[in-house]
Structures are given as C-alpha cells and as structure tokens.
Image 1: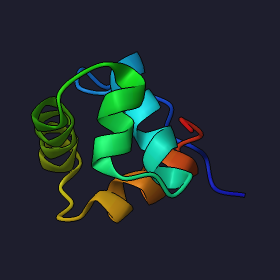
Image 2 (image 1 turned 45 degrees about the horizontal axis):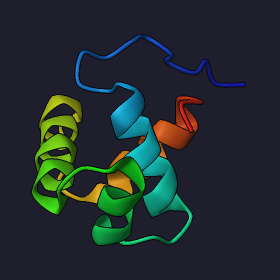
Image 3 (image 1 turned 180 degrees about the vertical axis):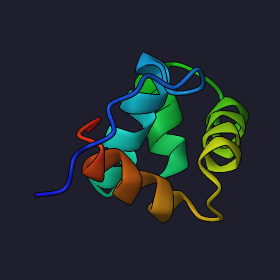
Length: 72
C-alpha cells in the first residue's frame, strides 16, 4: 500500500481545501468562490499557486493529488 504524503503545504490551507472539495464535487470556480465568500479571481490565484507548487498543469491534477494525499 502506498504511503500518503500528508506533509503540510504552505499554499494548501483551509480555503484551498474548501475550493478543491467544491471542484471535486463537480462545482465550478464561480461556485467555489461563492461558497468561500471570495472572488473568482482569488480562486484562480490560489489554484495557480497550488499547481505551481505541485508541478502540475491542470486543476483536475490538483484534485487527484489532494485525494491521493488524503487532503480531501
């Protein structure tokens, strides 16, 4: 069984986890922004920061890694 990396990330905080949960449930970035009471631009910036830190190009890759790491 593979070990899950649960190392805290400086860019993955509760806001990012909330955004990722909304997206993983099929929500849009606009819906994630509304649920978190932030702008859609904030959602995009936060996702971009995670993509850069994790070395991926797409939000779906962020969601998959978050699931594999047991974050969401």
